[in-house]
Image (spheres, rainbow, N blue to C red):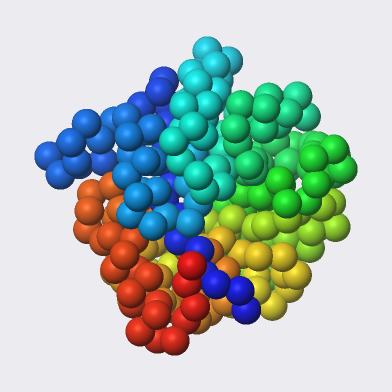
Length: 251
């Protein structure tokens, strides 16, 4: 198993970080470049930006954010949200993104996933999986539109399909656990691990350092969180310290 990565996620709209930010705790916390730089200095292994507005107007703003960030932050940058066609990916990579995270667009058009992988390589393609418990064969369903719509897809059939289309990584976000701070969905992580030949990023539910350790032990290769980092409930250093204390290799 390779070293576990710790990844803060910044939700960006109109050039500002919009979710899970406590303005009293973080000075000028709305600036994504400043936050990304702070996380870089704090030992983050990667940064993920999610363009939550994802409108055409917002996209040029997002490109400016990625460009500015790439000049200051020398770790991989993943950008998700608003990616609908191959040209969107090419533009993001041109302004400094290292990877793209694709969710709803891949569900609507699976061919897009294989196009991205063929054009730019599997390592660029992160599949964003917003999964929740549902009445499907595996007991888990796939949602789209940021977890708002439950599709007819079975989660594990979709996981198998996207790997065949060229997925380089799977961002496994539990809609059930998201925002609860009660811990990652360990059953979901274990089951996806069992059928995945590519790295898994666990997302949704982080509330304590122990939760990160549990997710790594369940099979996650990377651990992603937003509000607990933004609100300084937990630091990246504390997560890495807890992982090391359990004999888990970190970067």
